[in-house]
Amino acid sequence: MADDESAVQEDREEPSEPGADVSENEEEPVAPHEEEGKDGHDGNDDGPSAGGTSPLRLREVVARIRDDFAEVTGLEVDRVTALTRGDDGWRVRIDVVEVPRVPHSTDVLATYEVRADGDGSMGSFERVRRFHRSQADDG
Image (tube, rainbow, N blue to C red; front, side):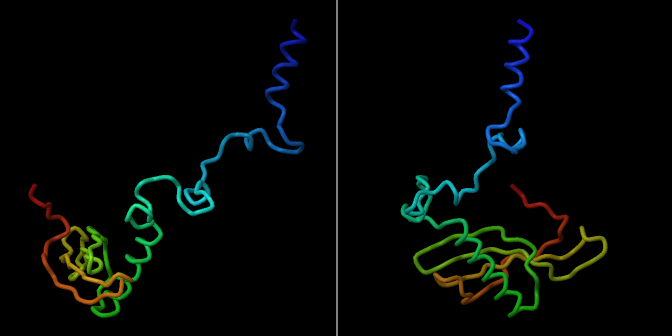
C-alpha cells in the first residue's frame, strides 16, 4: 500500500507538459483584454456598448488633459480628483502644486476644473479652490 501512496504523490507532482515546472500549472491571472470575446466586449455592462468608456480611453483622455494643462500653465498635475463625461465633452478636476514648500505637507495646492471636448482636447480651465496639502476637506 505504501507503493500505491507514493505513486499517487508522484502523479500529483508530475507536470502536465514535459519540461514544465509544477508552479507553471497554477492558474495565472488573465488581463482583462485577454478575457474579451472577438467583438471586444467582455460581457460587463460598463463597456462601450452600454454608453460607458473603456478604461484605456479614460487613461488617454486624462493623459491628454494632463499634458495640455502642464503645457499651458507650466504646472504639473499632482492628481486627478474627478472625471465626468457629458454631452459637451469632459469635465476633469485636477490638483496641482502651486507653491512647493519644505516640508511637503505645507505645499500650497489648487484644484482646477478643466473642460475638454469629446476627444480630450482642453478647451478651458478655472481654479476653483486653493489649499495646503495637509488641509483636510470638511465632510
